[in-house]
Amino acid sequence: MEPFRVHILGCGSALPTLKHFPSAQVVEVRGKLFLVDCGEGTQIQLRRSRLRFTKISAVFITHLHGDHCFGLIGMLSTFGLLGRTAKLTVYAPEELADILQRQIDFFCRDLDYEVEFKAVDTTIQQVIYDDRSLTVETLPLEHRVHCCGYLFREKPSLPHIRRDMADFYHVPVSQFNNIKAGAGWTTEEGEEVAHERLVEPADAPRSYAYVSDTRYLPELAERLQGVNTLYHESTYGEDNLLMAQKYNHSTARQAAMIARQAGVGQLLLGHYSSRYEREEVLLDEAREVFENSHLTNEMDVFDV
Figure (cartoon, rainbow, N blue to C red):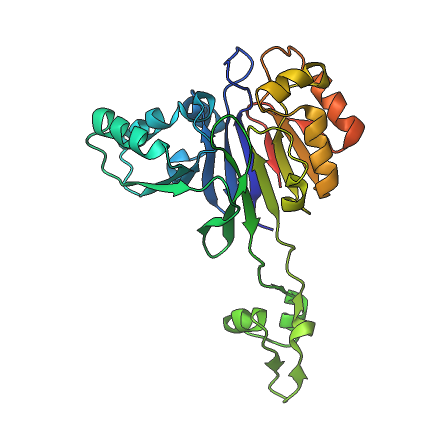
């Protein structure tokens, strides 16, 4: 099974601390790298992660609060200094388009690569990225500004060749792709070997949802049914429920309620308020509702 991983670069909230960086993470899918949010210090964290961040092909920004996008222009500049030539696509709310272009024109006049901007509609769920192995959908959220999450879904893959059966029936490697696509095999003796005898079922497609800043949205569970891994902001604990309601954030318990209702595989907590010196209180609250909950920390890597 090819890698599908989430690399945590930053899981703090608006106020940077000595413990946490602002929001940023890399989603690694079948050798492709995608950056989700780009808070201040993201490029430093990319260096620490030892990911080949020049391979990042797209950036997905959830909303225009600084802790989710202040690092973008610095990273674009660094890509230029490193001699990048491949196009980089930035998906973000429409309001970023003019701001980003002004920054590029002022700070990055000599980029040797194209920065393509694609505005996303944060009010609807739709596929905004599609390649041979993956789709990315928007997830409408409710925050103090236009905001959406992102849902990464693998496309179904072909079945696996049973090498023992292929060897037994002397199937040449040149025919493997045809057999994966549904063909059978006829031996030199004329025996018909059914497709089903030559393959094992394909791996089940995996999915990862990134739910950024949002008030508690019970209806979100319907959009997340069966997701393998869910990252859901958990800025506050129940001790600060009124703060969560005031600033359109969620508590760890509320994140866990979404995870339970959606039947996800595992829940990753993040976007912690700086008021919590020990995030274990958030983890305890979440696990009371959804046992397979985990705290995120910088440089953590989670298999989807």
